[in-house]
Image (tube, rainbow, N blue to C red; front, side, top):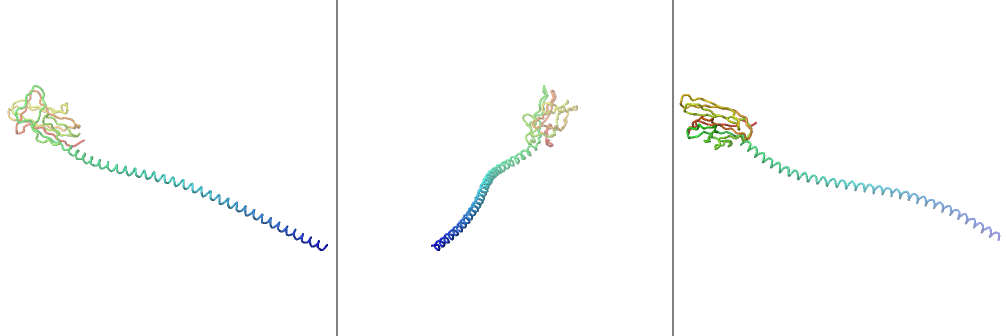
Amino acid sequence: METRLSSTEEQLDQIKNQSAVLEVRLRVSEKRLEEQETGSSAQFSRMESRLTDEQSRTAEFETQLSAVTFRLNVTKELLDDLKNQSLAGAAELASLSERLTAAQGNTEDELKVAFSAGLTDSGIVGPFDEETTLIFSKTITNVGRGYNSSAGVFTAPVTGLYFFSFTAADYLKGYMGLYLYRNEQPVSFSLDLNDHGGYTSMTSAVALQLDRGDQVRLALPASYRLYDDSRNFSVFSGFLLFPV
């Protein structure tokens, strides 16, 4: 009986020892499991943090990409506008070039100014009771069409320095005289005395600076007379020296 009891106690001690060992192993396993869980949790946290960082970077990249896309679209619109403006500018430049060429042609034509006109084929002109503008009606030359043979007036087509001259003739005794007017202001008065009763003439010339639209004419004083016929004894001439 005692032997069995001892054997049972030994078995019980063995079971206790085994239980203690198992308990130790269980605690070690639990600790390892806890450590693994802790490590896994930390690793998961790190992975989750990395994922969050990647998501943030992706979102930032998408934002930058959107901004770049927007700038590219704006740049494309600006380039399209510049292209359209360039085409419009080229068309305007071509039109301006055409107008400039035409203007240069017109300017060259305007700078060609010269005229000469004879007084009349009718013989004696005057005397008149009052000062009278002489109408040199026989156009010899009228380049630039500045001289009006119906009114006896030259109108400056461009601003510049002009040269005018005239020759007046008569064959009877007495005074010959002519006023030269710029607009309504007398510039010069030429006078000569025919004291021998034959053909005689006088000539005068003047350089005048005229503005565009200024007018020049010759006027015969009251009681004076001139003579002209088909031989052009009396002639009024003028031309542009240069523009100013």
